[in-house]
Amino acid sequence: MKPFHSATVRSGGNAKTIKGDKAGEFVTAIMYLAPARMAGGANLCSMATLAGCDPSHGGGCLVKAGRASYTPNINLARIAKTQRYLASREAFLAELVRDIGRFARKAAKHGLKPAVRLNGTSDILWETAHPCYRNGQRFASIFEAFPEVQFYDYTKVYKRVSKALPANYSLTLSYSEASRAYADAVKMAATWSKVNVAVVFRTKAIRDSYMAAADGFEGVEVIDGDETDMRFLDPKGATHVVGLYAKGNDAKRDSSGFVID
Ligand code: SF4
Image (cartoon, rainbow, N blue to C red; front, side):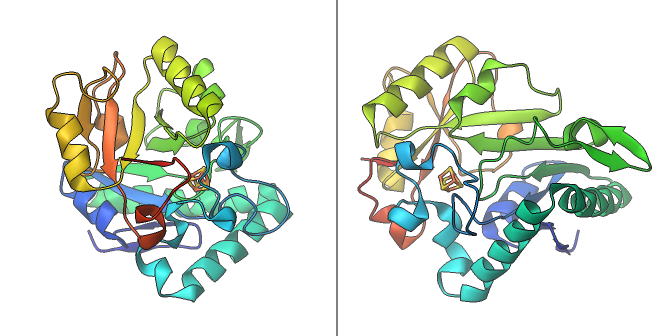
């Protein structure tokens, strides 16, 4: 399937997605907004300061990685998109419904299942306070509006896994040792929810050494999170560490505790 570009989500536009697309019958589209307070106004990543990943404070957020590191227009476009979301959530949701609908139809035409990651570079609680309309019918969330789409995200807002999530939404917790309080809270949330936890290691070699270790990372088995981005295909029912390695200069040099040595 050719790359899919729209005003909100895009598919096949980066290596991560293309890698993922080869892994199975799903095709993924990702929405990239401006994280934390990068667009001004409200904070889209409520745990970014505690987790040490806020890009405005030197954190290792991926918003500055890849093409965005040498193409300033990419983040300007993300800021403009985020400002549309902040100015009118209702109008933005209408755009999103239109774009996800187009993406889902295109995927179906190619015999593929659509998967969408709404928080490519944000940490919005899409499951709450985001009603939308599809074909004139009101839905409590975008997940309910598109039962045929598999949604997935990473999150640092560990409280999100304390409630039942829509059946077609998969969340992976995101670890950081920027503060003891945050690291302990994530471990605790993972223990009782059994949700997987993504850990970003400094290098591939460090990540691989934890994958090979009998006791994994802090006693939890580590799986390869870079093979595919499709976190909803990861093993469920017992917590696994989803091992990733740092990409982008900011992430590689991160000293906040977000990237683990
Ligand atoms: S890493 Fe995630 S939570 Fe942190 S600033 Fe980036 S998008 Fe927000």
